[in-house]
Structure formats: C-alpha cells, structure tokens
Length: 164
Image 1: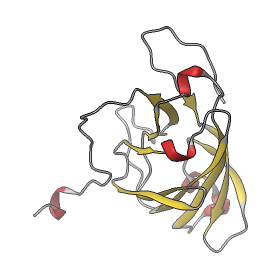
Image 2: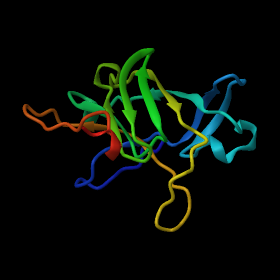
Image 3: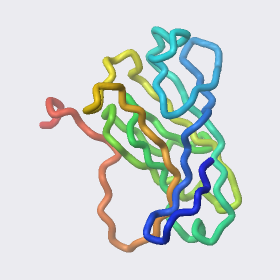
Image 4: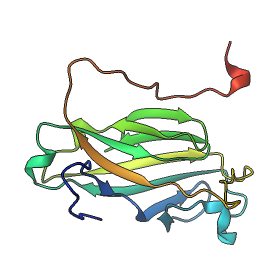
C-alpha cells in the first residue's frame, strides 16, 4: 500500500492498486493485479463474472479518526456489487464512470476489513481513452471530514437509453 506523505493541500489516501484475490465464476481462484481487466489474460477468456477481494488495513493515525472513509473507484466495467466483511454496501452500473462507496462502519483506525467487488460484464468491448488504449482504473481508500449537509451522487448510473 502507498502510504506516501502528501502536502497539506492534498487529501490523504491509500492506493488499493496491487494484487487482489480473484475468483472468476466457474474457474479456480487466482490473483490479479489492479488496475487491470481480466479480458487481457488468456486464462480468463470467456469469463463474464468474477469477484475481486482483498483485506484493507486502515492506518492507526489521527487523520483517519472521526472521518468518513470512502473507497473510490475510477472505473469498474460494467456492473459492480461492493461489500465489506460480507455485507452488501452498494451496486453500480456504468463501465468507466467513477463512483465511491462509504466504508466508514468497517474502517476502524488500526483495524482491517475484507473488501469484495463482484463484477459482471467482462468480455465487453473495452472503452478506450484518448490515447487509444484500454483505460485502467485506480482504487483509493480516502478519509473525509464529516459534514452536516452534503450532496451525494447516486450509487448507480443509467445509460442514456434507460432514462425515462
């Protein structure tokens, strides 16, 4: 995990990039680097559903106390169901649309929790970025100051043709 010190004007975060446990539906469990997508690996050809899991260790530091802690996903292609310690937290639809999930009840400073992301939708045409390559998406764990009134984005996005 990246515990790099950051200047005061930047938010504290921990990169969740790296090795994750990977359980492709109907195949043996494995490990996979994140960010990545399983379609790039021949051994996962034909997989359309899988679960990514890893233990998240929360630093025992003041900057993580009395904070709202969120996992930020820069993109999960295409359907995602996020859970912590086996408890469902959020569902997201939308390929490369960033979203975040509140994990505060599980993110005790000095503790750890098991984060799981069940993904459906591999084997879809990858969306490419402006440089023409597949877009790899980071995951971050980030504490935030609690606020009384706050606007929240919905945890689900709809394609244009699904809006009614």
